[in-house]
Length: 209
Image (tube, rainbow, N blue to C red; front, top):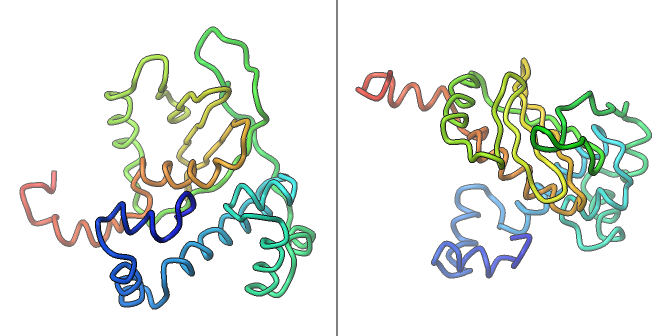
């Protein structure tokens, strides 16, 4: 959606735009554009309240085409501007994070941005990290007691389990990639799954162990 709009999403799914809109409306009550806008707003709200990223950078990081569009959408949906939201929020400064480069390289690169990735409990964090460790690509991925780290050009992305969320620490030169990073991190750890429903469906089968 962010790269090519509704047409690109429909093409990716091998269906028509009309059928895609029909499916969204039937399952979610709104069309794909409305869903995409809501996701952008939620990410923007999180960046405003959990980081010190400048408002202009927040707009583009969340996927908005311009600061004016961002301000107008925030006003329309929430009734206040991004600046007003930030003024009422306590900014949580990023905590100390693992080094941004492979072992043996100096800790240099972009400043760290820390975001909370929430999920439906329970989360089998140890099992997930064990799986990632077994499949880690040497020099590109690292799994240790602190969590999972993926090295990218000019920086890194780290995921660390906490009591009620996953801490995402991103060191990237271009914050416009944050929306994609968040989406891929959630997919990597399957954070949008419903463990209760999965247990109900598979708990009585041979797959339970």
